[in-house]
Length: 126
Image 1 (tube, rainbow, N blue to C red):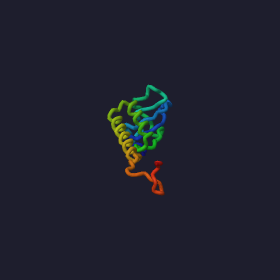
Image 2 (image 1 turned 180 degrees about the vertical axis):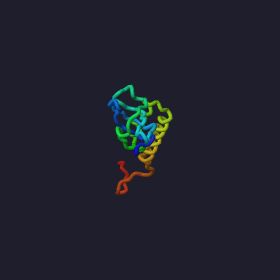
Image 3 (image 1 turned 90 degrees about the horizontal axis):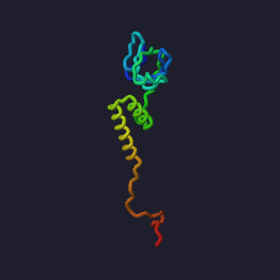
Image 4 (image 1 turned 180 degrees about the horizontal axis):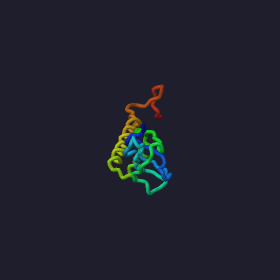
């Protein structure tokens, strides 16, 4: 039984020994063959192409949180390198939302009123 699903991020090696990192486009459970869209490889010509690999030669990668700005930046770079305009837009919109939410949390509340110390005196000398 195969442990991969379409869309899973994986890394591994091809039959030619090339290191690949990408996501699964199709999976044939009967033959245990997975087609991986390569986004990084030590063989530059493989990047952007789909390669067939045995499932046993691949390792499932952990899912990155879209709440982490560093993860989002890496995914934006990936969307640019794969020229996926829709995904790029979704990721940049998410980054804007996170920045906006963070700004709301850290925004200082303006002080209205008279400043005074514990003795009831203002900080200004007369």
